[in-house]
Length: 211
Image 1: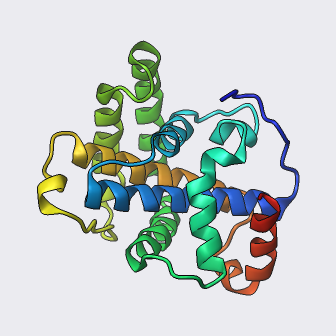
Image 2: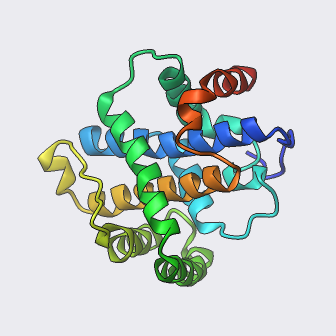
C-alpha cells in the first residue's frame, strides 16, 4: 500500500472520525490479542507505524495514506455511533484510551518522556524494521514506564494462557500506546468527549461517506 495520500482529508469532522477510528482500532486489536493471541496484520502495522511517526508530513500519512488501513476502527466506531452491537470490552478500552489521553495531556513531563522514548525507538525501527519484536518490546516498555504509571489504568481481559505468552504483554501495551496516540490526534483535531454525544449524527455521516 502506498504511503502517498490518495485523498486529502480537509473536513474537520472526518478527521475527527478517522482519529477516533484509530483509537477503536487499537481497542479492537487489544481485545483480539488478549482473547485469540493474533490480530489483523494490516491493522497492526498501521498502528505501529502511526505510533513511530511523530512528525508526519500530512494528516493522511499518519495512517498510511488510505482510510482502509483504519477499516477495523472505522467499522467499530460506526457500530458504536449507530448503537449496533459492539463488544462492551472493546467499548471500554476505546473510551478508556481517550480518558488516559486526557490524563497525559495534563502532564507535560510525561509527554516529554514519551517523546524522548519514541525518538530513541525510531532509530531502532530504522535498523530492524517497525514491526520487529525488538521495536515492539521497546514500545511496550515505554508504555509501561509512562502511561501505565498513572493512577488511572486500563485493565485488559483475556485468556490467561495467551496473556502470558512470549511478547504478548508487549504487543498489547504497544497497541494501547497506539490508541493513546490516535486519541491525542483526535483531541488535536478538535475532538471532545461531549461531541461523541452531541455530534453523533455528524460523525456517523462522515464515517458513512468513507465507505
